[in-house]
Length: 433
Image (cartoon, rainbow, N blue to C red; front, side, top):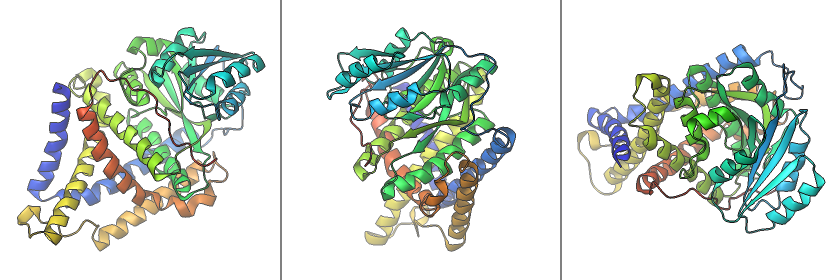
């Protein structure tokens, strides 16, 4: 509870400072502009420093050694998708690996499908858990029986590129301080408006953020759908926390607080399914927002040790982003009251919830530049990406509203959540396939 109170006070103080000093609207309109420049500059530097001369995802990388790798696939109600996932995992251009599928108490035919696949693929081993205990527990169980020092973890509906395992393992064999490598997810559900906009999101927002964070210091989270881990690093930091709703964010912070590096490998591609209904998208983004808040609360009192100073930028970014959301939400409430209920005095008077004409033009221009930079970088990994440029430019506007409502709700849910409540699976929207 102490952690939650401190976290709430930090965010509340930032909002109140903006409100009482009259700079709240400037913060609302200028903070996204500032962060866009941060992401653009960081990602461009990342590209010229690491990506410019890389061979591309279709070229098999050469490793000095090929240690044994365990590909872990936690599954819950993935009877429709898991066969395709295991087939792609089995086709890895890597000489020394196994596949471990963990059925976490599925209520569909996942168990029967996995048992049949185990007879078909010699590299596949299957574990059945009696009850739904959550992805974190499934990963823990998979790690217990895995034989590899390096663990490549993917979701039960994800399709690994044939060279993805080699690309994710390589940084860990070169640098002993690398504890995890996050891959580069690509959207394969592209039949609806939401699907097409998310193609833009994963290139112009998520891809750029991961590149920039890698340059500036620490990565907020590995991708839960595709990440590789060094077993020794996981053991050092205590593995995945079964009580966290987003195990990927939590393990990322735990690794980096224990001074392990996380690297982003853009050539490690995986093709994933994403929600294509508003209900499914809302549930997914709400879980992400709540998970980020839970990790923030969990670490807020212990992170100020000087040894953890490299994490301070992540904390500041999260606190400012959350303060931005609540400032924007508060401005909408005050504007509504002032316009339709009663006049408000002084700093409480919000004349508009839209950027002024000049700043609106600047924001739109910077958003276009951000999308252009992202498309130039990401087209090397997705040849069809340019087909979605017309949809990509709309994502920054959608990002404002999605972040607004999911962060407001998720932050409150994290405050109210019991610290001992286990994060179990829920059936999610996989899109129209």
